[in-house]
Length: 181
Image (cartoon, rainbow, N blue to C red; front, side, top):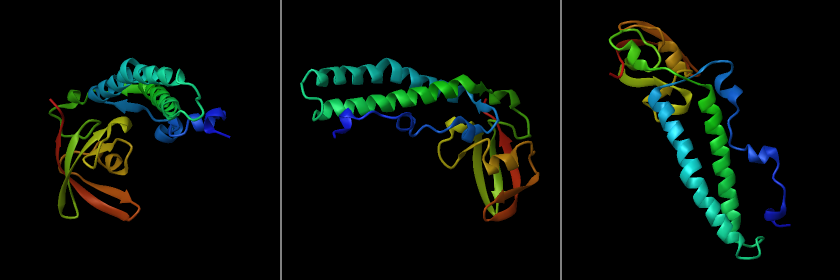
C-alpha cells in the first residue's frame, strides 16, 4: 500500500521532537534576549513565509490528479509535517523560556549565565560562552547545564575548579570573565 494512504501515528508525528523533560529535568529554560529573538524570528518565518509557500505547492500538486504517485504532493505533505513539528517545538520552547540578560552582570568577575570565560585546561587556553539550551552553536558556546558550565558557574577569576568528565576529573583555572556590553 502506498504511504500516501497510511495513517500517520502520533509517535511518527512527534518524531524528532526532544521531550521537554529530557532537556530540562525540572530546571528552568534560561535564554538570552538575542537567543529568544532568533527562536521567535524562526517561528514567525515558518508561520508567515515557509508554511504558506508549501501549502500553495501542495494545493497545486493536489489539483494534478492521482495523489498516490504525485511526488510534489507527497514531498509537500512531508515538508508540511516537518514545518508543523518545528513550529510546535519552537512554540513550546518559547512558552517556557526565561529570558536573562547577561549584561546585568557586566563588570563582575564571577561567572553567571551569559558569561564568556577563558580558562586553562591541561596547559591550553580555552574560551566558552555559557548560553541557553536552545542557543548553543559550536564548541565555543556551551549550554548552562553542560558539565563545563556547571563546573564554572559561580566561580571567579583566578579560581581553580574541578571538572568531572567521563575521562576523569581534572582541575581547570579561570583566567578571565567577560559579559556582553
